[in-house]
Amino acid sequence: MASAAVLFVGLPVLAPALREEYALSLSGVGVLLATAWIGGTLTLLPWGLAADRFGERLVMAAGLAGCAVCIAGAAFAPSAASLGGLLALAGAAGASVNAASGRAVMQWFDASERGLALGVRQTAIPVGGFLAALTLPAIASRGGSEAAFLFMAALCGVGALVSAVVLRDRPRAHELETATVLGTLRDARLLRLSLGSGLYLYAQLAVIGFGVLFLHDEHGFSDGRAALVVAAAQVLGAVFRIGGGRWSDVLGRRVVLLRGAGLAIAAALAVVAALAGGPVWLLVPALALAGGLSMAWNGLSFTTAAELAGTRRSGAALGFQQTVLSGAGVVAPVVFAASVSATSWPAAFGLAAVFPVAGWLVLGALREH
Image (cartoon, rainbow, N blue to C red):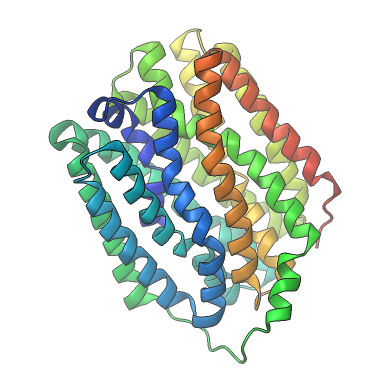
């Protein structure tokens, strides 16, 4: 999961370098950052169904290998359009790990342990983002985006190898019936959970996706220095995911914590909006905290989706949920970049604070399973 996250979470760290190399506007950067999410949106559900049918080992190894090949191709893209196409293909292949790795954890742990276990699994995402924030700016400064993409491709190749060699599937007693899968996808609770989580994702992409550009453009930070702030947010996100997962195991109430996370994210983003033009010594910790909180909810949402469907259908449920989230990931960078261009950074961050409040409202009717 961490190797795939280097693409999905780490790509924004390269935004300043890509903007310069390909002469992109801020809106163009937003579209480029959305391409990996576009590819994933089209394949997340099929990958989830494949995990239910063929097992996690094959799905993860094949998908990450394909992702590595596409990212390696992106290193030599001659234009922004071809780069976007290759990143979309990389996202389509790398999406295999989302549902498959979650399904594997569902197979291995019972209900009293899943919140913590899936929290650890979800921590792989900020770990990948932390690695990207620490390494990619330095690599790009020496070898350009070509070297950075080749490094990302190598990490995905390692992820594919680990999946093939280490991962073990549990025996499947019988095939999953089509009617059972369709019933899972029509579950109104799963749809509500996915929509509410998608609204949370907007806030996450606003901070993690554009934090480097914001600090670079508005406060004169170097790419490496700005990336350290995003790296700090990734560390906090990892802590919050593990802590939130364990807390939900103890309480046995995941939805309550999931909704609470939405209000915390909104409050943190409101502070960032208020401090956007203020002193850096206050802005930087506020931005890092907002970034960490914006990633805290994911494990809780993931666990809830899997438990709503049950172990046999978890691949389909997680694939559906991740498809909705990926759709939000396509729209969010474009909308946020447009809101910055049309208004200002403080106003755009203030608008982003509204989305988790909306997610909190959508999740209000969801009952504990």
